[in-house]
Image (cartoon, rainbow, N blue to C red):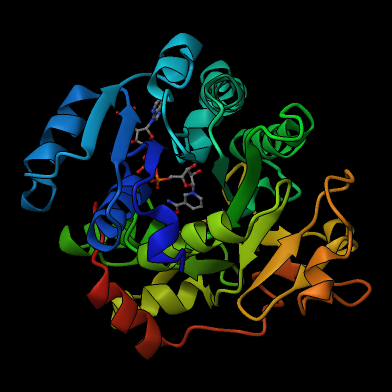
Length: 338
Ligand SMILES: NC(=O)c1ccc[n+]([C@@H]2O[C@H](COP(=O)([O-])OP(=O)(O)OC[C@H]3O[C@@H](n4cnc5c(N)ncnc54)[C@H](OP(=O)(O)O)[C@@H]3O)[C@@H](O)[C@H]2O)c1
């Protein structure tokens, strides 16, 4: 966890601050740190209004709501004045919607990333962490490809910022328990409507799972340890989608409906090619940059181990698995947002 002293008195801006991650991040940061300013940057005034009404966000003078689009570089630049750290969470994240509206996805996820980089350099912020997804590793859909392009933009941004400018890094993780639009609320809605079966795309399908508090904590610890140019990947468990369906509705049969366009059987966070420049720490992997931003064995000097030859981090070959009881405990602790 980022030490209290490190963030006390600092100003943070969160793009996408009204989303699932953003709201959890803001709640966590307000609880733990005495920030100078915490700026939420997003487009929809209603989401900001609703968030501001929540009891935990009232009487917090450090909290600021800034309406803006990541496609608008002037607005971003203005919002980052006096900001120390940026967490970039704004994105289009639905695979089918990105396939249907490719220009929109590119504008938000790729051009938005470029705008965040340029604004951060212009405003001379200290560090930027951008959120990525397992779908960015060997992508097969536009959402994943756009996030891979975004990852590349943030890593290469360290080439632009010079000796004293901002440092940029990426955090990549998998499905979030309880986040909007995931398979859990989808199954729960069908069950509530009285469905007589649950649709399963493929009985072999597996996914990585992380909770929002773990994601927030991981972003903060990555913000603390980053040198610039890393992709930080948490060690998190996998679960078979059929096991999840059985857990949610033990008596309902499954009907195999076939894998959907743009969907993978298993997700991957580190490909074999990325493995060649990755190190393992106790709680995470670090994909180190291919640019010489810093001494290439810096993480090894601090106790990190290079991953073995041929290593890949994928949801089907993961060492760590969630059983039904563990997932039930997570679903009870972090109910779905819808
Ligand atoms: N949820 C997951 O399972 C998951 C897994 C891995 C990685 N991630 C990544 O984590 C990040 C956050 O995801 P999330 O689940 O919190 O998403 P979310 O709940 O859909 O929230 C997205 C946020 O981004 C804002 N936004 C969208 N387009 C914007 C734009 N053009 N300009 C400014 N703000 C914009 C939205 O507010 P407005 O619409 O009001 O602008 C909202 O605040 C994303 O980068 C996503 O790729 C998510």
